[in-house]
Length: 93
Image (cartoon, rainbow, N blue to C red):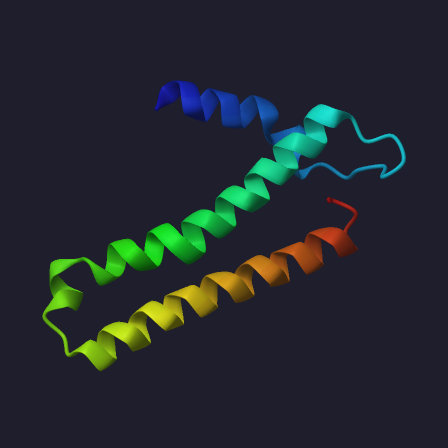
């Protein structure tokens, strides 16, 4: 956990820093791509699945489970797309 925090601290300027789209280093491009793909996988697949499988949600009726799962998926999708729009507007990606 400490190593992951140290790596995130060291690589954060490369990931969230402003970019020059003409001379973007390949490492920065891959780091940003991995972060974007990772967010969408966690936000739209893993998190809704974990919440739906939790004991609290499994006790609810099926319609409520579907509504909660769909809401989490849509929320993560909207946050991801909004983040992509904003980061592109700020020349971060």
